[in-house]
Each structure stands twice: as C-alpha cells, then as structure tokens.
Image (cartoon, rainbow, N blue to C red):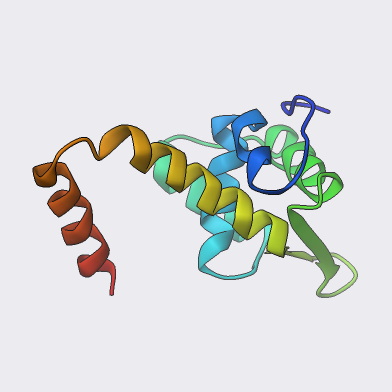
Length: 119
C-alpha cells in the first residue's frame, strides 16, 4: 500500500489511514466524485497542487480497503463513492476527534454551532 498501514476494518480503519486518505474520505462524504473533482477539492484544501501520482494510488488503496467503491462513468473516467465502511471510518474519526476536543460545555457549544451552521 502506498500510504496506508495495516487495517482491521470498520470504524477502526480511520486510525490507520494517513491524513491525506482521511481527507479523501471526507471529500467523498459530500457526494460521489470522479478523480479530477477530488483532486480539485484537495488542491483547494491544501492550497497547492496535488500530484496524480499521489492521488490515484491512495484512491486505489481506499478501494482495496473497502472504504471507497470505484465505478466507471465512461471509458476514461472513474467515479468514487464511499461504502458503508467508508462512512463508518469517517464517523469513527469524528467520534475520536470530538472525544478529545469536547472537554467542557463551552467547547461542546462550539461544536453544536458548527453543526448548526452546516444544516
């Protein structure tokens, strides 16, 4: 695997993914996308160019791990979509981050405000 380490499956997978792979999963949480759309989203986030040689091997790893499903849109374009395990990985990561961040009522309110702003 290019950037992934060994994984055990389900929500536990998120702890073994690189930040780059986790960011791909987060992007795919919004909707299924083709590779160049994922690349653009990552470039917007990082503020820098994302190399095809980094993106596609990581997408392939996420497919191999069962977190992302790859389907063919046409002969040249693949679409990527989160699987149920991919959703569990994103939720597992959010759960862990929140368990560390939300240590008092004020921080909990900050998170509630963020969630409300997204709705």
